[in-house]
Structure formats: structure tokens, C-alpha cells
Image (tube, rainbow, N blue to C red; front, side):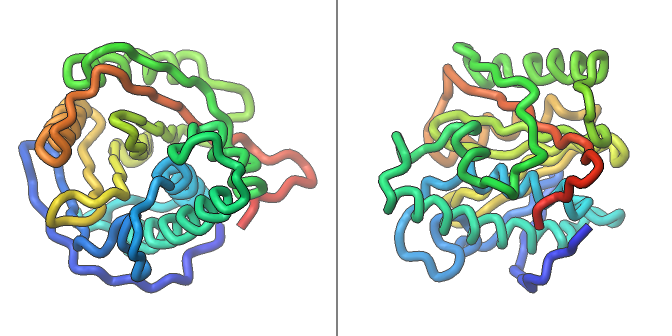
Length: 243
């Protein structure tokens, strides 16, 4: 798998809340400010998709064994923000978007060859309070993923785009690491992007942490949200993944 050539070394602040490990990026490292950006960004769905692609293709481990965020994760997020913003701006300039906030199928189509092997396994919209239901809905669908895996699934990793309050974030389920990571490219008050990780057994704590983040940063209490479950299919003879 091709590795990233981007070299980014931001000062990352880390903290632990119960079993939740949180990695705060500096304020300028977010989708609305990274790369000397002067305007806001609505490219979060594209960024989440491109980040999933890089995690899969580069076989990225989000954190190191000593609980530090990996350089590969930082570089992949930087590249995904830059690429996602550039692609989103090009789509806007062509008048190709129905709305500034893209759906997951729109993002997959816009990514073109880069997303050739990504498959949307399931997409579900919940008219429920996110804080009261997110963990249960994730756990139920994850159990079905293990019981009834899709054909041509490559590996056991699962990527979930969570859309709530017009913001998309990426959940990465890495079975061999026994870890779940949340990757959020938005700005958060004095901080930039944030990466959060737990052992799989503590997924409920991660869900509670994210619900609290939405309330504290944006005053949001979503009563409607979407979960889009993505995986990468195996290559057939003559097929090659996009770089």
C-alpha cells in the first residue's frame, strides 16, 4: 500500500476521559482553516470519505501502541482536508452540488476513481435523540455486520460516516486492533480537528463523549441523524486500487 508523503507535525494535546482517549489538534488544523484557508468549509462528508480511503489503503493504525496518535493518521487527515476542500470548491464552481452539504453517495460519486472500491453497505436515518440512541443503533448494526458480512469484503474493518447537525464525522472500527476511533475534521472552539479512540468494549463512552461535544461546542442536541456504513471490496483480477 502506498504511504503518505505529507509531513505535518502539529502540536497535539491529549487527555483521557474515563476510557476515552482524546487528541485535540491546534485550531488552524481543521477543515475551515488548514492550508491558510480564509473561508469556511462544508466539505466534511468528502473529507470523511477520503480519510476512510486512506485508512484502508495505507493500512493506518490510528494510534501507536503507547497511545500516541500516529504520524500516518495526522498526514492522512491533512491530505484528506486539502483534497476534500479542493474537490468541494471545484464542484461548487461548476454548479454541480444541489446543496453545500453533500450526502455520502454524492461524495462517493465526486471522489471518482479514488472511491472505486468503496461500497455503502447500509445507510440508515434515525428520527431519534442522538444522545439516547446512538450507541444502541450502532451496536445493533455492528452485530449484523459480523453475522452477515457482505460478499467480497476485504478484511473486517468498517467505516461509518455519522451525519448530525449538518456535520459529518468518521467512525473507524478496526477489529484486529480492538479499537474504535472517531475522526472529526471540524473546528472546536479553541481547538481544531479531534481524534478520539476507545477499546471496542467502551463504544458507549465514545458515543456519550461525542454527544457531549455537540452540546458544548455547538449547543446542538440532534433529534435526527444518519449512519452510513462503508467497507472496501476485494480486488478482482486486473483491478487496481486508486492511489
